[in-house]
Length: 266
Image 1 (tube, one colour):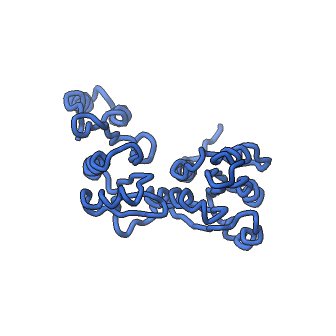
Image 2 (cartoon, rainbow, N blue to C red):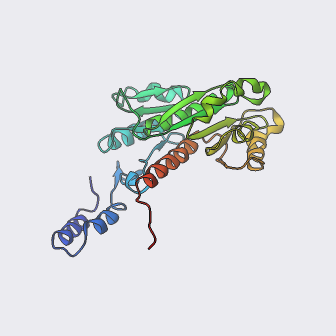
Image 3 (cartoon, rainbow, N blue to C red):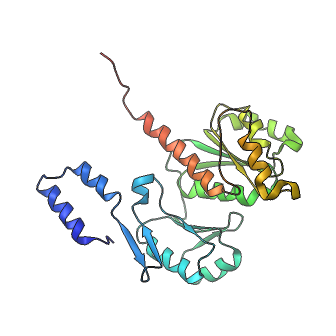
């Protein structure tokens, strides 16, 4: 559904008359299509995937069950994958009766409408490492987000530095990953250790897991920002979703660059 039909008609006429090239028209359409839901409580950005490579995702907290259901019903008309993050079990229990075909990833707290046999669409593998079992909710949010966005994921859970031999036993497998997302709470040391072992980008995710002096994730966040290991990018506390999108952008950019012809100087 296009919300500005007259503008769209005018643009298409200009293309048909040769006044606007198809490439310029496509660029204009990248910012064209949004749709109000139920009188305007939400405006869905259907062309976000054209602009950024990833479709709009629903942030669950702060929305009513009915609002989430209505947004999902509208989004599924435009996309084969619709997802909502930070959906608690009691919210899903109500959503499943309003949204047919809805699946719940409990560990990740993600509800999604997606094909049953979802296959990776992009080359490369994202490695997901968690320091402890308590970090799994954030780590699974990253893993499920990446899979729903079309990326291959390998999970390695509970490999924190308190028992570093667990991490080192997977050293060869970790070295094969194209991008690594490393999730840790407490003092947040794991990303620095991993970044010292691999030649691929490392995305560090601090979690709010830890005793009082971790200050709800601030301590691991500062540790990761102050890492002496090069090649680490840090996202916000508990932001597994953001880490997955960043990892996906890295892989998509690498793929795009691989198809560009090499420039030749004369």
